[in-house]
Image 1 (cartoon, rainbow, N blue to C red):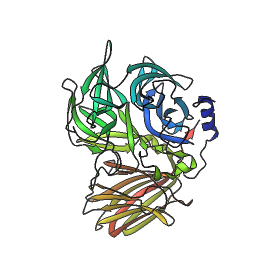
Image 2: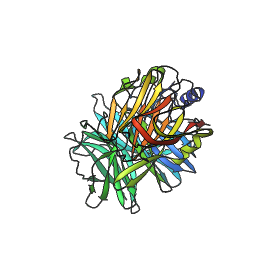
Image 3: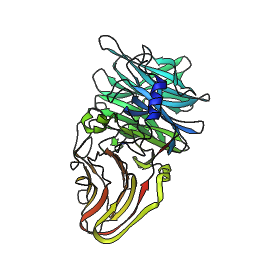
Image 4: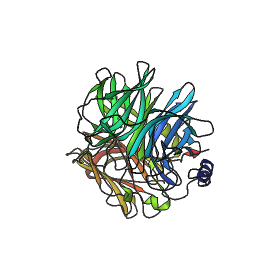
Length: 480
């Protein structure tokens, strides 16, 4: 059998669905085996959202990079995942790396990075178009950038197309020869794609590589997404191995310069990287990889044969230079309405709620005299705590009370004057939290050692004036 036999791999996926292991998530996209990472090729085509993502169907290691593919009309019911793009020739024999999707001349196209190494281990990164075919695979088309330009290393990847005044461009993550990260811009012209150069920013020495760039438009404002690698951790930011964030301002493609504010992180959790955003009907929709490179010991599901998830879809808005992210409204369709339980209490320092194996929690805490509030997810003797310090205006996510997987703490600034608002999506292992109506978000995994449904306990150091909210059990994604 060939190394990548689409028919055999697709049949193996179908045979492993639905998921059975208690660590497999119910409303986060993941695979029954192998390793997934970056979402790719996001596009709306023929009435459906198309989601591609990196996948190694042969093991739980960062090798054999292929693309998997699903389709959905509503982010709730999905086509069966299938192998769509895999290494086949000298250009991408060492991996089909990340890229974007677009609709062109009535076809769904992709643009991705081919990765190839010679016998001495020297890398060549080429940018290549492809076309999604009705048989579920991607036909490989022309290579439009055969290698890295002078002055830049072969760490040169993740093309993402955008449009400006009817002209197509793409941004590309790159590394200068002095081993600092940047973003390059290419423009489509009659005779091919022309390198315009670096998009100049105030961050000329900000990590050793910028991955997964994307240039977005919010009204009259531009936002550059990218993932800088090599930032030094600080007390309230840059606490992961690698970061995912953005700068907001205005881009001039004439001067190849961006006037912008400070770099801000998109997600404050332990497990979020390589997000991609696409626009449809006025919504900027984000999917991210729930995982983190070079933290293999944090993910014990690899011992069971699979690792990592994608986030739920989020809708981004820009307010005063800051991105707010909220779960896409389609996620409300997962709520099992008859399971809803209201939380209503006044002048209390403790509230408890039992949670199902998949749950959404919406809470509003009027702080009153309380200076600290703890939201504890208890799994028997294990726990994960979200601790808010009102005086310091700091939220801490603490996984040190878990026995398996990643531990540690994440701390970030969060302003809550009178009311603390939190929305939690608690899957079997994947958790996504949204604070202050989407001002901040945090994605992270927990791996309960025992098969115990979680309990939510909200406590405070003094009486909370009021706590209100609702808890729902959530249904699982459906596959057809």
